[in-house]
Structure formats: structure tokens, C-alpha cells
Length: 425
Ligand code: SDX
Image (cartoon, rainbow, N blue to C red; front, side):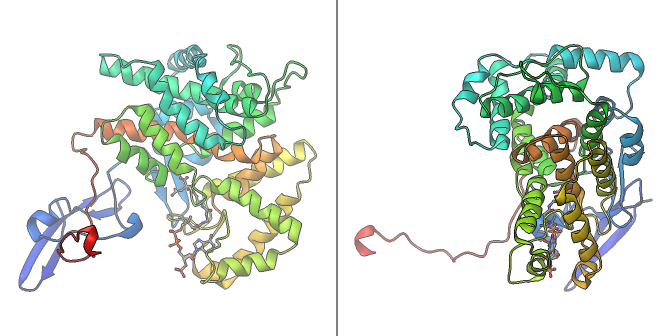
């Protein structure tokens, strides 16, 4: 039985239906609001606005819960592969053995990129940020693969191409930026180890694949694989609603993720920790973050949804300890991060604002420990998030109620006025 909320304005009373999600979340359905009342809603930053119903990922920000298709992310991080997690997010269930084998074969078959794409890389300035290159290259993929007439086949092959080629595109940007020989994907390597090999193998120093490093990257990608309607996923859905190619929608998602308030935070955290290490100014950094007049934010802290410890940050912190211990690395940035967390979690400002470490706070430490350069951190995030973007895009395309995303506004500009010829200005 549908529940309603009442909206009263003057002598008029309106009834708006309530939508209740499978975990008990409630939303006021305002899809007929303007038609019935003449009003729209205003919610800068969409902190109180749902853009869709979705069956993919469940977040509970108060309890620190994250589940992909109902499975807690802790279990997937512990037991699943990244390929299984990608299949789960995109298809709504875990693959059986045969499906996983078929998926692996397809990912291998589509792991090369057209040789002509190398010319694009050669013409980017060597100092170009790899996120800008990745966004451009993903969009450029359409130019090499004409659209198939059979829509289902087109979608399936595009999804596989993206999941597989994104690793090759990312590793190529790293190799070419350093003037190194590009390393091709290998048919005998699994998803994560293939990427590491493309990044770090060289003709004079073969890359020694270490299972602990592969596991750290696999868990990193599983933890980043989806996060419901975050900024970059919303960009993919919004751009996708114009019925652009999946390549273009994903390219928009990569661009949104690049921002330091979003996926770019993992790079910003390491830069912040490095600055603290060089200047020995931890207390001042914390005080700056609390100063309303200062736009500086403590990178890796706070979250729009999590008002408690990000469940992914807990796992990432353990992975950081494990990987550093494995290679007997003592990274001063990890010690600084832990000290910073301890200070912040005892500070009234952070307590009152419910500011806790988020996924980005320790992730950079893990990436440093496995040899990923700082400017590639958000690229690694993007590779992890790709299955989630694809799953969310597919869900929106399959939704019979989905339409072109076109928000409204409240106009606050000048009343009607006339053009003034230049001679009179
Ligand atoms: C990701 O959405 C997702 O799911 C994202 C993500 C994903 O998986 O896709 O989880 C990945 O993007 C994680 C977040 C990475 N970003 C950072 O670590 C950057 C630092 N964090 C902040 O910029 C901030 O916490 C945001 C942007 C993440 C969230 O900010 P909100 O919810 O928009 O909160 P806000 O900016 O409105 O801040 C609320 C209050 C403000 O104080 P008041 O004006 O109310 O007094 O909290 C303060 C802010 O000043 N605040 C911080 C702070 N974060 C919020 N103060 C100091 N340091 C911070 N980090």
C-alpha cells in the first residue's frame, strides 16, 4: 500500500507518494511535483536528491555498510577476484566456472589496442596527466570500432573491450611518458598481474610477479569497483542519458573522477602527507583544515555519505600494513597518516562534523608500496571503478522510465532589458 506525504501551501494541499527501497530507505517521488504544484525543488550538490532507483550497490553511511548486489564488500575483498566482482556488478550475479572462463577468454582477446593509437600518445606532452590521456583515449576508441547494428552485441563487445583495454591504455601512458618500450598484454597472465606486467616489465629487467602485490591490487580494485551515485557515476549516467556511446559516457566519468574532491584525492593525500613530512607541520595542517576562512580540506577525510569510518578505508589500512611489512618498507607517510588519523579522530571539529578517513586516505600508501607513481593513482582508481560505471550505465539504459537528464533551476538574474548598441555604451 503506497504511503504519501502531504505538502501544504496556503489553502492548497498536495499528496506526494513515498518510494521505499529494499533496505527501508524512503524517498518522496516528486516526478509530478511541477505539474501539480508549479514548484520545483532546489538541492545544491544533490545531497538530499535521489537520481534513480538502483539494484547494484547498497551504502549505509551511518553504519558503514557497502554491498555489491547484496554481497558485503569485505567478503568480496577476501574471497573474490576482480573479474568475478566486475561480472557480478554488470550481470547482477556471480559467474559460474564456465562463464568465468568465457569472460577471461574474451578479456584476453580484446586486450590489445589499435597500433595507430600510439601516435596519439606520442603527441601528448610528456608531462600530460595520465587521467587526461585516459579520458581522451577511451573516447577515441569509438573511432577504431564502428558501431554494430545488433545493439545487444554492440553493448556486450564494447563492455568487454573497455574492461580489457583500459589496462593496456593506462600502462601505455605510463611507459610512453617515460620513453620506455610499450609492453603488450600476455595471454598467460590474469587480469591484475597482466596490468602490473605491462606497467613494470622491461626488456632488461623482467617483472617478477609477486602474489602479495597482485592481491593488494586486486583488493584495491574490488574496493573501488562501485559506490552507487557518486560524482563520476552520476556523470556517466547523465552523459549516457543523451544516448552517446558507452565510450563517451565512460570518458566523462574519468574526467569527473580526476577532481581532487573525488577520485583525485588519493593523489592529493600523498601530496599532503609529503608536505607534512617535509615541513613537519602536522598540527598546522589540522588547524588549517578546521579554519572556515581557509578552503584547505584534510585530503582523504570526510565523505558525502559515510558519517563513520569508510569500510573500504579499514581494509585499505590493513593492506598497507601487509604490503609494507612484506617488502620490509618503512614508509614515513604511513606513520604520518596514522598519526594524523589519531589526532583528527580525537579533535572536536572532526568529531562534530563526522569526518573520518575515506577510501583515499590509505590507498595512496598501498599504491606507492607496489610501485605505482603518484600521478597514476587516480588512473588505478578509474580502472577499478570501470565495472561500476558500466553496470550503472547499463541499468539506466535498461530502465523503461529513464529519460534524458535535464535538471531545472531557479533564475535569479536581471528582469527583461533591451540590447544597447555599441555606439551608446
Ligand atoms: C571519493 O561520493 C562517493 O561515493 C565518492 C567516493 C567513491 O567511491 O566514489 O567515495 C570516492 O571521492 C571519496 C572522497 C575523496 N575526497 C576527499 O578526501 C577530499 C576531502 N574531503 C572533502 O572535500 C569532503 O569531505 C567531501 C567533498 C568528500 C564531502 O564533502 P561534503 O559532504 O560535500 O561536505 P561539505 O563539503 O559540505 O562539508 C561539510 C562540513 C563543512 O563544514 P561546515 O561548512 O558545515 O562548517 O564538513 C567540513 C566542511 O568544511 N569538511 C571538512 C572536510 N570535509 C568536510 N573539513 C575539513 N577537512 C575535510 N576533509
